[in-house]
Every structure is written in structure tokens, then in C-alpha cells.
Amino acid sequence: MALITDAARGMIGTSDPPMRVEVTRRDIIKYSVATEQQQEKFLRGDEAPPMFLFGALRPVVPIGALGPDGIPASSLTPDLPLKRFMAGGTKTHYFRPVRPGDVLVATRSLTDMYEKRGSQGDLIFLTYKVDVRTEVGERIAEEVQTRIAR
Image 1 (cartoon, rainbow, N blue to C red):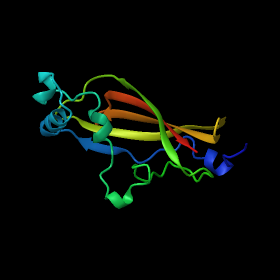
Image 2: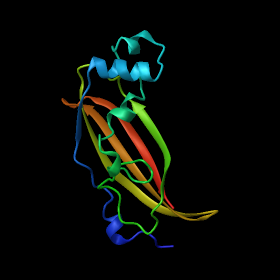
Image 3: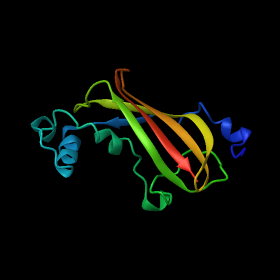
Image 4: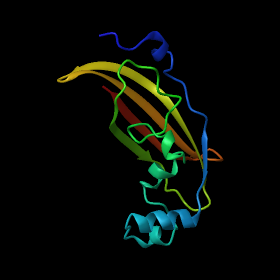
């Protein structure tokens, strides 16, 4: 196949600049109400529900800055011959809950890239790791994301 160039492979191990997010009780409450949480600890804003990080770590960009897949352009997306992207799955390991007052620092890195032939053609898999810590270095979560180019 040889769809992945040496230049694209050279991006493995690179990271986006760290993203800093200050979490407020109000942020947690708004998210909890919007997602119809039932547990009081979420509705009071004492602790964020696990999926809170998914939205909190997305950059806020104008709609025109979103790609066709609804994701903002990323410096960690190499130039590939396959241009249509889709989600390939996410696995998240939580070390402790997010709480109001936490200042989170998330770093996203491109960790792997490989190709496969699917039933409908060639595919390129991109794997990313997102490391989420507090500003003082306490681990909050680690997420492994897969995107598929076709």
C-alpha cells in the first residue's frame, strides 16, 4: 500500500501545545443539567461527570474553522492521501474526578499511524494520546483516541 509518507511518519511523537482549562462549579453544574445527570454530586457541581472532559478539552473556534467531520483542524493531522476522516474510538482511564477549582493541563500527542485495507478500500489509522493533569502535575485522565482516514 505505502500510503503513509516518511514525512507523515515523522510526525509520530509530536504534540500540540498544552491546553489549559480552569474548571468552575458553574461549568460542572451547567454540563450536568444539560446532560440530565441524576447524581447530586454532579448537580451541585462538587464533581464533574466523566464525559465532562470530552467537551471541556475541545477548543472553542468559529464554526467556519471546523472541518467536514465537525472537528477543528489540528496541527497533528499529517498530509495524507486519504482525506475523509471518521472517529475510530476512544478509551479513557480516569485517575481521579475533576472538581471545581481544578486547573487542567491537557497535552495531545500523535502516538501511532498505520494502514490497512478494508472491505471498501484503504484506511489509515491515527492514534492520539491525551494526557490530562492538574496544573501541579496530578494525573486526572489519559485518553487514547483513534481517527480513521479513508
